[in-house]
Structures are given as structure tokens and as C-alpha cells.
Length: 163
Image (cartoon, rainbow, N blue to C red):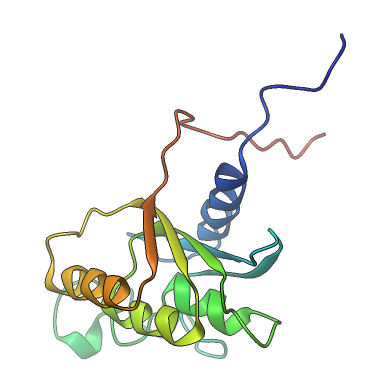
């Protein structure tokens, strides 16, 4: 065999793969989302997944999706994008790209804009017709954040832990 391997994953597939792998840490029984923030020079500078804030037991707070708001997960869960931002060890995210499995909500869009992230690459936009996603897109576009749905023919990336 001569020459380099040709079936390697692209940078976008690699970073989205990190986001999807991060989502596997989520204990949410319905929706697992991961995020990966990448510097302009292709260094990972933040990862996160949706879950409760540090110190809040995921055994004591609700995971329900319906019922009285206070008894659902919604007032408690920190989204993957915000976790990735808050988990970043660097002082500035200006010019970075955020890879995320699900198009960001309006609250995460505010944090993305405020930190100077310039591009969002996402896998799914299954809530695109909801008010919070419409508001999110409106804000991100107004702030000049580039939005791109990942385009790939790859359906899976297989990780083997018994290398």
C-alpha cells in the first residue's frame, strides 16, 4: 500500500463526532445533545452536553417533559451549547465555531452571540418551526453568525474501544 489513507473523516465530521460523543454523557431520557467549540486554528476549546448544573443531583430533580413547568426538566437543564461555553478553559471564544447536534434555542443563541462565536454547524433543526428556534435564527443572523447544517454522506463514525 502506498500513499496516504483516503477514507479519513473531514474536520467537520471530526468535530461533530466529538459533539455527538459528548451527547452520550447526557442523562436526559428523551433528548441528548452535545456541543464542541473549535478555535479558528482547529483546536477544541470547549465541550458540553445537556444536563443539570454541577452540584444539582440528577436523581433529585425532574426529567419530565410535561406537567407543571416547575416539575419538568426545563427550568433546570443547562443546554449543551451553554455548557460548552461555560466549560471552556480559554478566556475568549471570539471567532470560534460551535458544532452542535441540534440547532440552538434562543437562550443559547444569546450566549453564542455574546461570546463572539462566529459560526454554528448543526446536524438537526427538527424544531425549526417553533417560536424559540425562529427567534434564535433571527438573532444569530442579525449578529452575523454563520449558520450551516452539516452536509455529509457519512451516516456513522464507529469508535472501537478495544484497539
